[in-house]
Length: 50
Image (cartoon, rainbow, N blue to C red; front, side, top):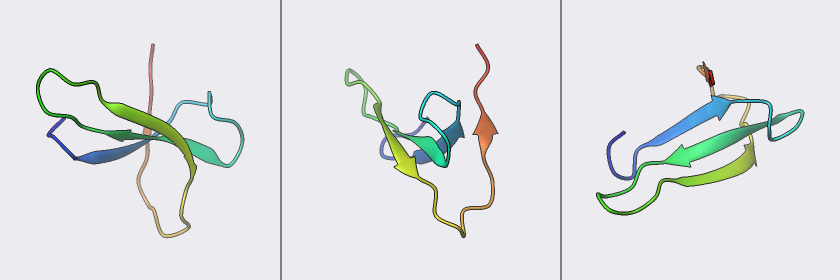
């Protein structure tokens, strides 16, 4: 994932109606993850697999 690139992932750990927003980071830093409400216009989602 490129630095500052954003991906929305439906992994069901955030609860109903919410998805995880993952933001890429530069080398040496951790990606940022937060549960957010998904905007209605957001079309594609990826499903996390363990």
